[in-house]
Image 1: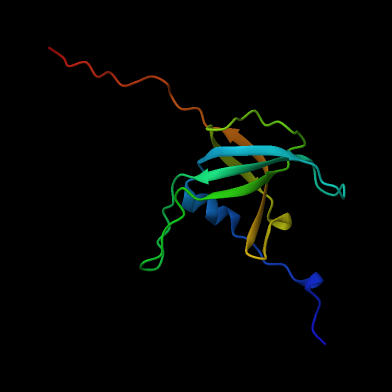
Image 2 (image 1 turned 45 degrees about the horizontal axis):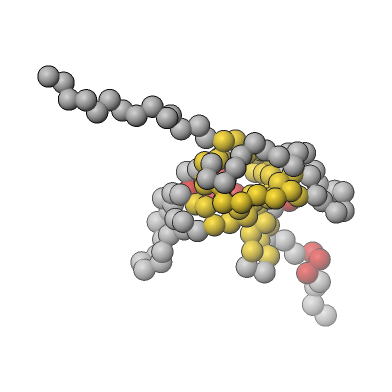
Length: 128
């Protein structure tokens, strides 16, 4: 008799993922998340695009730059103050409720913050 999948969980190395990707992502889409079982806090599901990937992959293996992924931000609110095109960083990885199953990552965090980029352009005037 085989052991049931109920007892299986594949861990995700979320903090390594954040380090390798520089924890800077572009928001592609968002929608509200409501835990139907009432176990996890409500929040948002963000579809994010990877901007950087500094991991060294095997020869011929492409990096993850420009790929998208979904992340659950379980902050108790259905609006986290970001919109499509904003740059964000993720905080407080929830390792105990994040996992990899059926070729999908279920990544959960407690917080997301908008990265404010300076709108000031560098002084391009030539000195005389």
